[in-house]
Image 1 (cartoon, helix red, strand yellow):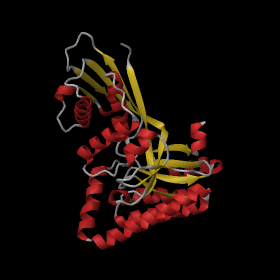
Image 2 (cartoon, rainbow, N blue to C red):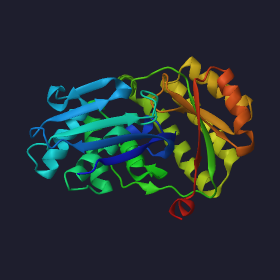
Image 3 (cartoon, rainbow, N blue to C red):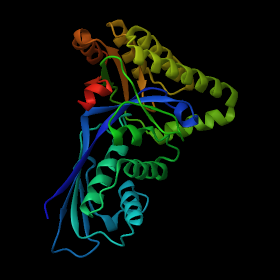
Image 4 (spheres, rainbow, N blue to C red):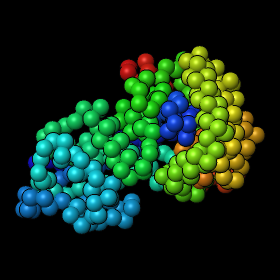
Length: 320
């Protein structure tokens, strides 16, 4: 049996972080320049249930049976086998690699779940459709991260720009023109689950104030959707700056992120903001193709450890 492989992209949230957990909209896009990949090779000499896992990027080399039950890989294998009503995996070797930075707001965990879910289901002869793969990844995120919004698994599974509200069918985002975004890594790792939990505790202690901030972020996101549909980049950039200020008030920014946002706007970016959970990870800058290199240099000078340039295309371009 030939090796079975599958992959999934990273993602960034353009607008709506944290507020999306509380029922407000978000806008997220895939980042295809970085990907997670899973390869499964049958082991005809092995015993049923003997699954060897090699994930060099996280220095994990183990058997599935030796993983704790709450490990994301163990959760995914168990959930998928239950869904397919299969008692045990055939003997195999699984290799998982990823170029998506970990703990940086680019959806590394969800991308691995999507890639691994696709590879396993295909290996078992029951390839799952996108809606089931997305739900599988969401269940892993819930068990591992606690209270995810569902936006990561959605945009990563479908690999298209989306307008997303928790508990509602996602909408594919309509773009008037291509959008160029720089993603700058602050070099500081951040735990999504910890930051989300901190925001939840703060919201519980002062729900009125935090609901007002979520409402502001939700309004910004709705306006951003309109600006994207109309191709009004300058207004979109201004909304990005407003979104960053609201996230600062939520307490999820970080001095290094603020410094990168300032460096990007000073160098000519239309707008910039942190992306993901915050308190580290990445920020994004909305740029024009002709000033992207100059802004990249400014971000590196301001302390960014890595720059990814991604281009978000209208659906007509993606489908052609």
